[in-house]
Length: 74
Image (cartoon, rainbow, N blue to C red; front, side, top):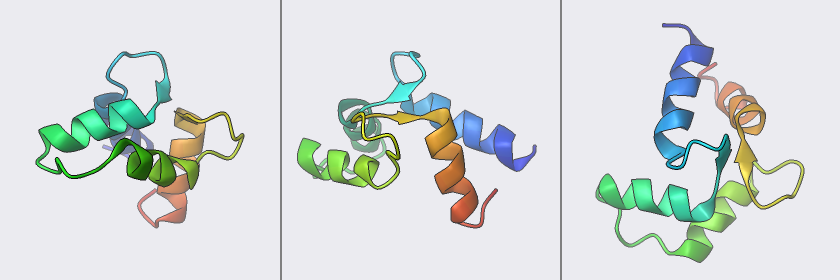
């Protein structure tokens, strides 16, 4: 599996409603399912805001992929 394939798999897991955008609510929901129940909606939004280069309040796959590459994984 290539880096972009892995990134797509991770992104899709967090994109609960499948609309192609990650929201703070989706991020918080999946993190809670993974055992991080203490993450608040505000904290989730702050984490997404770091990757939200177009400042629309959500993270698209392109934004996610760019962050993934910067992390050294892509």
